[in-house]
Image 1 (tube, rainbow, N blue to C red):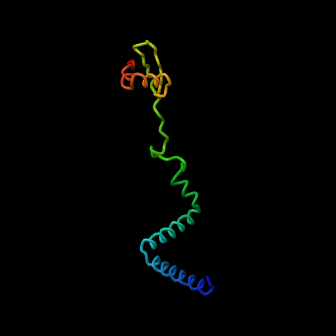
Image 2 (spheres, one colour):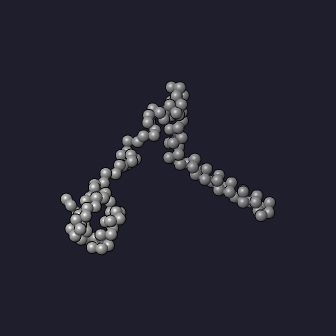
Image 3 (cartoon, one colour):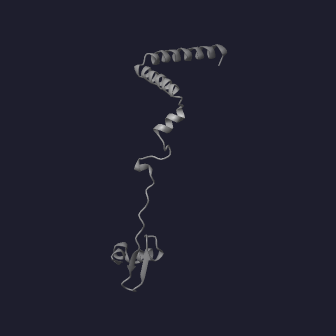
Length: 120
């Protein structure tokens, strides 16, 4: 890019930013925020407080939240299930369905059948 083209691009970008700045100056919401910031700064100065003091007053426990969703949920302990094979009388105690013997039974007899072997 030539120096002249670079200059024209920078000049155009500057004009766009100046137009954006003018539109922001006329924004009522921005004026209210600026007014609030100025009043807050004056109030902090009159009491000799800094931003950290204000934050510690408004949020004394910044790391902790009162929202229950933020707290980690604990899983319920798994219940031990006892299956008894009626053909062999063999017992299998497991907390999950990933037991090797239970899987073998389900392959051999079918999952519905093995589930009916659950002792209550």
